[in-house]
Amino acid sequence: MVSAGLLAGTAALAQSSIVVASTTSTEQSGLFGHILPQFKQATGIDVKVVALGTGQAIDMARRGDADVLFVHDKVAEEKFVADGFGVKRLEVMYNDFVLVGPKADPVGTKGSDVVAALKKVAAANAPFISRGDKSGTHAAELRFWKMTDTDANKGSGYKECGCGMGPALNIAASSGAYVLTDRGTWLNFKNRADLDVLVQGDQRLFNQYGVMLVSSAKHPQVKTAEGQKFVDWVTGSAGQAAIASYKIGGEQLFFPNAAK
Image 1: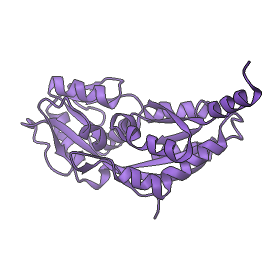
Image 2: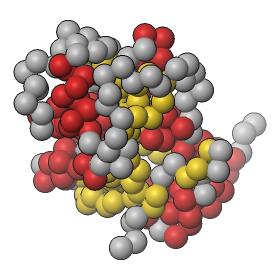
Image 3: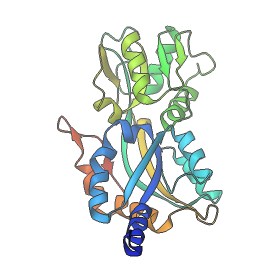
Image 4: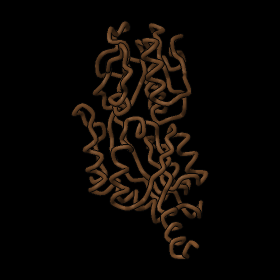
């Protein structure tokens, strides 16, 4: 016969888990695989990450299907909090977006001006893969297109895949297309074929990530205590150090900036 104490212990263990709705870049870059074991060791809390485009991740959190939201679209994040779905938005880390494309760079995009590069892509009807999935990266790409005078005509080579960052990079690699990607996913991407980083260093390519506890006032089922522990850890010294220590080939993927 199973003792009541054992059952209570098992129930407590089952409660020590949270759902984090996040963006594909944090998952596909390998960051979560690096930091979550350290969080589990420190707190005993398991984290189930549901990696979606930022827009979908925010929708999931709005429905109350996650305890924590960890994404990269500041305007949308601030609206999420203003609408009462998030407790408070905290900045966690940043990296940057880069434009990658064929090493030969047939339309001459190479440099540090992403808007000028997109104008050249459109004018040449060059192949360009857009995620088209309402992700943070897709939102950034659309912002850059709006800065061009060709936003209404992105060229006949412009295609939306409606897919995550990894699949978009695979399509670009197999078709010799240009694509905007976050640097973290790019550094972890193995199937580069003939692709190379062509545009980087533009201040507009800055990519900030934020974390928010989902509001229990909107969704009483939210695991507030456990979720707050994750928020506190990832923005605290241990979590920030874990983020900084994640490197591929000696290159740091994300730069912690919670403590300002």
